[in-house]
Amino acid sequence: MVGPFGGLTAAQALHAVLKHPQLLGEPVSLTVNFAAAVADGVFYAEAQPVRTNRSTQHWQVALKQVDAAGVESVVTTATAITATRRPTYRASDVALPAVPAPADVAPSPTEGRPTWLQRYDVRSVAGDMPTNWDGSESDTLTQLWVRDEPPRPLDYCSLTAFADVFYPRVWRRRATLTPAGTVSLTVYYHAGAQELASTGSGHLLGQARGQRFFDGYFDQSAQLWNEAGVLLATTHQIVYFKQ
Amino acid sequence: MVGPFGGLTAAQALHAVLKHPQLLGEPVSLTVNFAAAVADGVFYAEAQPVRTNRSTQHWQVALKQVDAAGVESVVTTATAITATRRPTYRASDVALPAVPAPADVAPSPTEGRPTWLQRYDVRSVAGDMPTNWDGSESDTLTQLWVRDEPPRPLDYCSLTAFADVFYPRVWRRRATLTPAGTVSLTVYYHAGAQELASTGSGHLLGQARGQRFFDGYFDQSAQLWNEAGVLLATTHQIVYFKQ
Image (cartoon, rainbow over all chains, first blue to last red):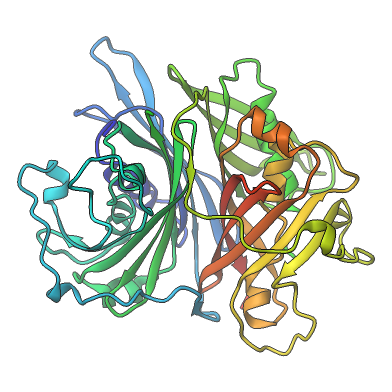
């Protein structure tokens, strides 16, 4: 893939907001634009509240790095909206798919896989990465259970990182390996402190689909439910692919 | 609704990018955060290319207004990614739904509706706004044909505005009128100059669904196809609702 695990970068952008002394409320949405591959080294996160209303707050974030020649550049930009929430009508229009429980699905082997993937327990339910790269076409659906490895309680940052756990949809669609990398990722949060706490260190069911592949970019839409069937986040991204 | 038509604001944010002398390529993604209602008056659009790579460019945009007391404030922030595209593999995983042609669907009356809606020719196919506000629950699907009124050829700005043409999903879900307003809108573009030109001034089929309604916010995911069945844009938003 082009660049490091985007989920980690997205989580770090959100973290810069959540640690800011002027923070109002909890995350409602986050959009992260991956402007350049984050190099393995020091980065600086700048979060700025550009407008604070009565119950909502709008953020701009930049992650910056200084290269060997001493030149600073922006490697990631992000915007976020946080809000103080209060209980309202609640409903879901998409139910947890009928899938076997995580205990009944074998963890995917992580040997030889990227290091970040070894920090996850992934249990593939449907649409696993092709094993025959024979160019045969298929739908783009992937369903998997995932949690942190070792297990740790869910928080907004780990939820954000889970949003980017899926391998590129174009690989599934075409059974063809082509360089690919997310250029923009959006997460909508549908969870408060209670939903995070009740999820704890349990698995999330992630479901992802692509919609359109066109001239170097494709989109992906995904959902993340906890084991109790609560839809905690919906997330979308647009992804570069080479050919 | 809370504030003016967000589609127009989003189109203006994109327009600031597209008119910038340093623009590279065509739109790939746009995220607009509605920080405050844009007042009926002068606004300033500032677009800044924060990183330009070989084939991609990352933008930050702010729309600002000065109030009666002379105080300037940010009313909208946006980020965009533009790119020079080249032909690659093309495919869709979501087909144009089986719906009657626009010529076979009556235009919705616009008398007494908001002015911006009178600038559209909307032909409802499924999931029109409830007529009985009786609190009965339903799914959140809406399908409609839409074009500019009077007709004009599609461009990236009008495509952007179409992304926000749907009435709030919570009204459909609950058959209950509650104040609602988009807080963040993302558009992924799957069209080049050729797709825009071949669409011309024809209708687009818009399809929208909500996924989760939770403590003041719900999400909406939508698609926009042209009459020939080409998926031109996919779009997502998160929307405030009062109760």
